[in-house]
Amino acid sequence: MKTILKELYDGNIYPAELIALKNVPKYDSVGERMSDMLKMWEKKLSEDDFNQLEALLDVVYESCSLESAESFVYGFRLGALIMIEVMTVKEGLVLSSD
Image (tube, rainbow, N blue to C red; front, top):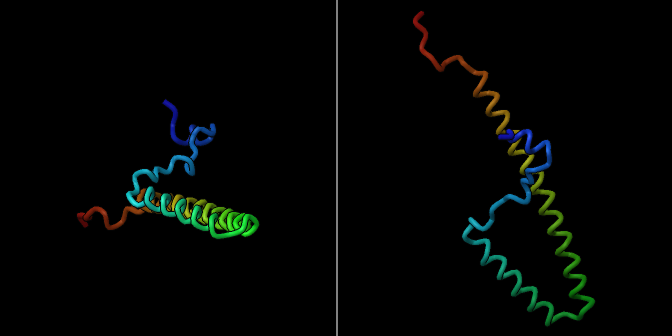
């Protein structure tokens, strides 16, 4: 069995693709609302205006993706620092007999 680090190195782990939003109860309803709203705006706007709206949303999605990536990196680093602290700090964990 390969280790997580080996799988990550080999390119077999894709954290951004493995996030299970299906386990988030509101995710499906938010997706449906977004779809319904886009259909509404598509009917109301001219084709050119709607294309501009879609271009704006693409930029918003790109921004969200960048923010998610940075949040992942920050969380991973913070978790690693916590583990380093847990593994290296020994004082105060055991009562000394002195």
